[in-house]
Length: 203
Image (tube, rainbow, N blue to C red; front, side):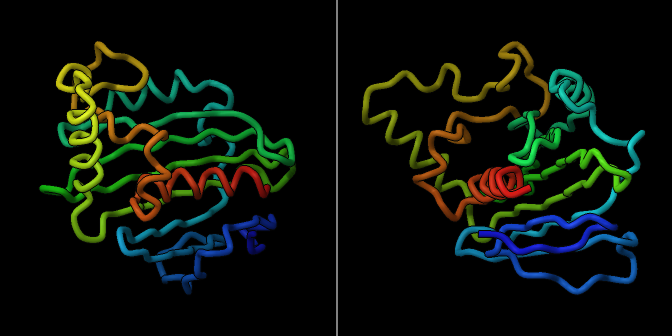
């Protein structure tokens, strides 16, 4: 289910379990913000019009990967980049980057663009999906499970999802793979992936 809102001059369907947040004085004209809180995360997303010449390169995930790799800080890791078309046929592209905020506390930043193919141009989503409490329970649980199952885990636990030889920053760890999302429905990474999926499916 989704809720329609207006971003610039375009109607956008936002996941229904996100609450509208009244605009702040510094918000860009035509933007709309939404949030939700779970037992494990605080989520905030702002949708706003994006100038077409400032949009991510639709269809070129590798260009986004290369740019993120070039600009990662020591406390950051690339989690995901993907591109495709929404259910309504609009091109989209997005990235998720994790920033370590302290022991067990993580911030997953979302940047997503959808090309409406109309004069309304590009709609952008910028999201902050942050730990509420300690998020390292996901890492610990998966690590322990693999250890119990006698799986070799030390080699390859940390690995960039697109270039195993890339070691700058703080690479993605094995527990952050999508296959573990269903086990951690309130984890911020699960929630950011779900937000992307629902936005793509309903627009």
